[in-house]
Amino acid sequence: MCVILPNLDEKLATYQVTAGIASYITGVGVVTLPRVAGQQTGTPDVWISLLLAGIISIGLGWVCAKLGQRHPGQTLFQYSQLLMGKPIGFIVNLLFVTYFLTTATYQARIDAEVIRHYLLDRTPIAFTTLCFILIAAYLVVGGINPIVRLCELLLPLTTIVIIGVMLLGIRNFHIDYFRPVLSEGVLPILKGLKATALPFSGFESILILSAFMTVPKKAAKAVTISLLIPALIYLTVIVIVIGNISFDTVKTLTWPTVEVIRSIEIPGAFFSNFEIMFIAVWVIQIFITCVFGLYFASLGLSLMMRTNIKHLHFFIIPFVYFLSLYPDTLGAAFKFGDFNGYMAMLLSGLIPLVLLMLSYIRGKPQGERHQE
Image (cartoon, rainbow, N blue to C red; front, side):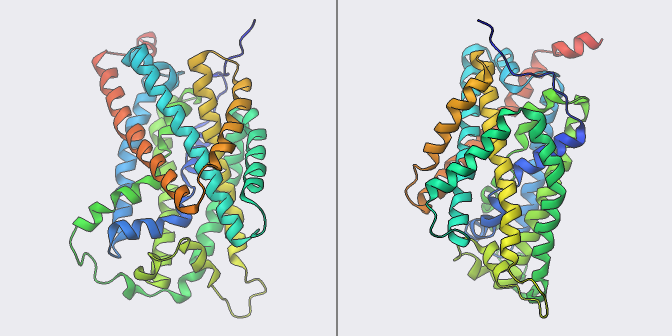
């Protein structure tokens, strides 16, 4: 029987990888970050914590990119076992697969929660989630190229719309809500790093996407630019939201970003429901994050088990659907997201550092020796 393994000969340009990673990163954090970061930080200096988290994420993204550059044409699921040994490498790969599955699950569930709250209040979450995942499955089956092309097409649109809609709130902006700066020192900023760093998770996808790059040496450039785009979006969201409704109010709202957009009024404007426009493009970003999670999980299992990737799609997609329905309340869904965040900290921070050190200890990778 012939086993059809994933086609790693598909090639992506640097700008396509940049668009893909930026789209993968920009997700749930757009609507929850002001509240979560505010609760963790405890002061209006959330924006400083966000900038610091962005800098740290770029550094960790560079580590991931450098690791991918040292193993051209290979994904994390292949060279992890070469560097750590098959037993440990298999466990690491399984952790990454689990992480990608929980990422897709969390995105699908929060998408359904927001849609029910603001748009389709009588539609069951199970039905909304089912439609969402089925559409995602259609794109996943096509492979990495259609996914990245969609990112390439939609990222400029979603970025412009999200930032543009948020800037409409500048009319009600109060700079005093941010004063005094550093009123309680730097400790609250450091406490908020966990909350402000998690929305940047997703840059570790370069560990996989670098295998498809036509010029792997530009992986670091791709991941750096891809992190700057969501950083700009998150910074705009946090500044406008807190500047509109105050820091104390932000901490009490479940979806503070959407609530601020709902309050925007422009005299004489023929269109006033800006939250609909915002949610529409935000759902696109959530959709892409979910699609990448499903694809990466299928790819990892296919390479680990040497199994037809298309067969795995049809196993993973029902699993993610039923798992997304497991949290019985919104609070339970947020706790599920916290679990996903802890996995992100481990897998995007610690594991790539260890793998990169092992790569240097073992000497030049096979790809570099062939070039010489």
